[in-house]
Image 1 (cartoon, rainbow, N blue to C red):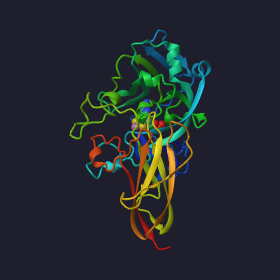
Image 2 (cartoon, rainbow, N blue to C red; image 1 turned 135 degrees about the vertical axis):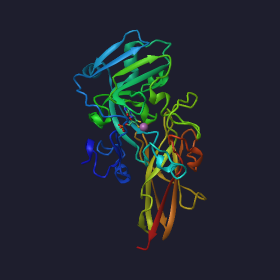
Image 3 (cartoon, rainbow, N blue to C red; image 1 turned 90 degrees about the vertical axis):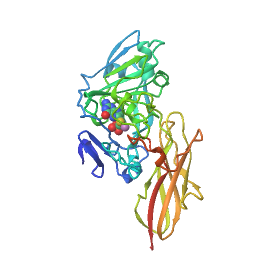
Length: 363
Ligand SMILES: Nc1nc2c(c(=O)[nH]1)N[C@H]1C(S)=C(S)[C@@H](COP(=O)(O)O)O[C@H]1N2
Ligand SMILES: [Mo]
């Protein structure tokens, strides 16, 4: 077992802060990612918080500021459960590196995304109990971990709009796949913002503030923005969009790039995900460079906030074959063909077509 209870085949990008993604085969094995497989992304040391001492402050533009213990949260609010995919903005960053290097950020493969069943209170219910005021247009979250990626070091934080915060699906979650939320995933309580980049789902949350402006936290104002290709990522770029809803994305998990497989029938499989209120409409697969496409079979839906697993049987010839996959979402958006035009200095949001090259060998 690797640190933080992760499986031995986990790919660890960094021990401190701890950053790790599952092996493709481990991710592909379960539509609901087990906790020992789920990726982990951290910007500072993982705090160990005594659940009995934990309090959540709800303040800012509210008529009734709250201080809630875990028992308060569980006793005073309706329990909500939903399946949601988390996807880091840096998922599939490795696909950008052949274009231009991205120093200082880990070369995440397709495993900076995972899906769990989350249980918690709806943020909408908690904000209603605090009686947020009409002029509050944003809801900011503050964690407990201090990151020295900000200068000076800062607690991790983010914000979302009030309309997303009160839509019902955003949770203050205390359980993951039916177990108390483990420390590595933000226990005792984290925010889960379904359909948004993982960075908005603040772990070890200790404060929720209703406010006029978005969060002034480094991870909202500087990091997790989509910068022009020539921008300096260490400088603030207030006009660059802060990432929120995840664009349609997909990757191939099996077989893996470079695999040697017996020629003949082979099943290609992976995941597809579209953020916010979009679902996956279709996944196309090509083995002739995109000249012709076949539709993959989508696995049963896990709900509106979750990825779809997909698979397709192909007849693999001997020699090298590149397999392409691209997903379409329910708004008609499709993944772009190449990562080149998407390259950005922090390496976020690579949603270009999935590509693996397989070598078919005589059986
Ligand atoms: N407090 C805190 N929350 C955080 C982070 C963090 O470093 N500190 N990382 C964010 C990022 S970038 C992602 S992608 C998700 C990852 O969640 P996980 O580690 O449970 O997979 O948590 C988010 N919430
Ligand atoms: Mo992330």
